[in-house]
Image (cartoon, rainbow, N blue to C red; front, side, top):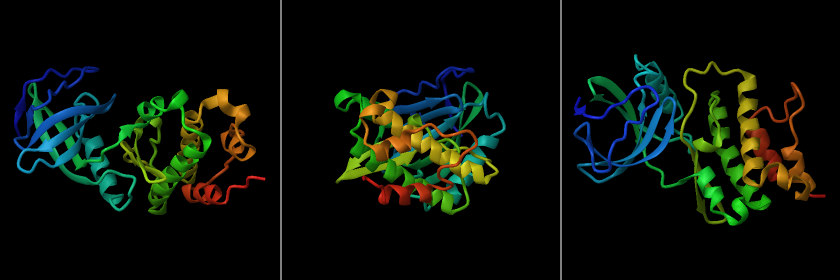
Length: 244
């Protein structure tokens, strides 16, 4: 364990500087994402130059490393799911005398979804492009559901995306650890995907101009109703979308 002289109080940032050495193995490249539970950084292995993603957990939020440990175990269980980061190892450093745990995963060269969408013409994707991205996300979450797990934290800020060929590749940054998965949790993941889809094609402002088949996906869910019980149901619906 190495010591890193950065102040980290509740609500503060680790503020690791580019080039800073961590755990004697890694150098900081830049910060990718920040959440209440911690921060995501891009690191480079000193010995090889291989880029890695690292999630640092706030000691105020996770003082006994229970969240970090649960995340590591869930990432390991989902290691064959293409949409998840591939977990490598857990490390600990000292920041101002307090132990800080971080999980090291493979790196994915993508862009945060909100930033990616903001760069598109009109600040949104076309409906057809949005369907391609929704399909990629549904296909990825289907793998998670197929293992009897729900992701539990599907949100725009948790999606990294890049274009590939006619479609997209996507990764989910975070997940909800320790979730005792129930059938409704699968449906909630799917509803979160549909909410992302609606937001990236323009939200409520674009609703009237959308084709009927797409408007049906953007309709508010009726109370206690379940449209898709599983990500596989959504994927199959998209692949057989009725246009007439």
